[in-house]
Image 1: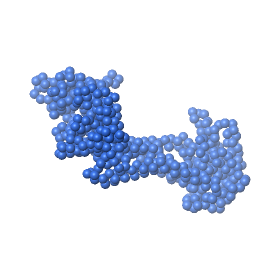
Image 2: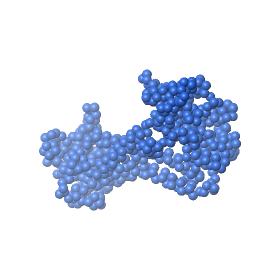
Image 3: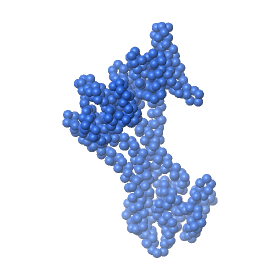
Image 4: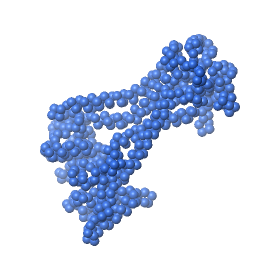
Length: 579
């Protein structure tokens, strides 16, 4: 494997980490929807209309059957063709909503339903469309220009809040249709990432036998000392220092990844246990939102509570966070509530007349603030300005987390941190395993030396009769020693070129190993090969005149010490070596 291939190998491993994160993120966040998509078991939206509040459906997937539509109110074009179309649909509970489609066949079907709907309204037909337009949809809230066009079109055709229930929700057929497709794509990402990860770990930790640019092709009859014994016989301070340096690098790379896993994991376990141990009747948050004097002193992430007698009203959804308005005796607050908690809140208020929400304080997004102001202005009939937001609705929103009683760190924040830290954890373990392979290889690379040879090599290293070259390349009387070097001119991804311990008699081939870019030599190098040692690039320097002199000096020194070795990279020498 040449230098370019090895660099590419590392980048492929980093890419594997990205693939694994993408695949895991998609399947964790979409697992329930993936199962429903393959089993065709999504709830029909008619059931939602009959049994639950529409607000609960935001950001969820359902089956939707359309048999009535008032027309298309907006389109998006691409290269002159319609790319997306938005329709006004008439739901079974006589409410109005919007639908998004992105296929020509779907547009044709909805246009047909529009014609049949108006035929029914104009008494030209006895029924609405018998051939319904059906499919899986994702329910979202929407705003901006699209929402403005939605409302304007409804006004133009005489549909108002007085004669219909107008819902500010969008049914997206394009999102519902691609669940299976995306599950396959992200599944392939994950499988490829795991396969690449396994391949890298195996290649990094285990020796690649029989490769000219790899670990030594060791003869079957060659006696090797054990790894443990090879490690125990290291006495030379210089070799020890190099070995410890590789060990430190391994620890430094692994430590961040382990800490990024361990600390949040411990916090998660502690928080979950501590909050579970707190009985519901004994819970007491730091602040009660109803106490305006005290809550004004609160800080972000501190716990708060409020007892409601009215079901919260949906106002905004953004980045998987759904914002609601809490009405407490005419005072308004903003809360972030997921669908499961909302269902529980609605059920408890319907059954018992009140319910206490617990959570932590979090600053809402600007979009949520604007929607909250619009809602309050509409309810109160006043025109409050954005500058009045904190005074009117409070600085913070209540992020409802029913399992959080104020001990430890909110579980949601721990999860968000882990998702954000995933790429750093993967990189930490990538480079950690790489450092581990180099650390172990240093001992492995000296196993072919007998105890007598190794002892003699250490003695010669400590004598005055040694010649030292850059990048920890050392010539003794009878041995060539190459210790770990952090030079920027070396290929640090190649563990087999980081260290070498060999007798000159074991070197059978010497050749230049230059590196080029766009046809121009950027580094001059030297490689040595022997059946017992494999191939090792022992030196790599830039192309200055001084460095060229060093390269030539090392080559001459090698040739004088290894008269039996072939010189030059050519087919003739490869054939002589049986390659």
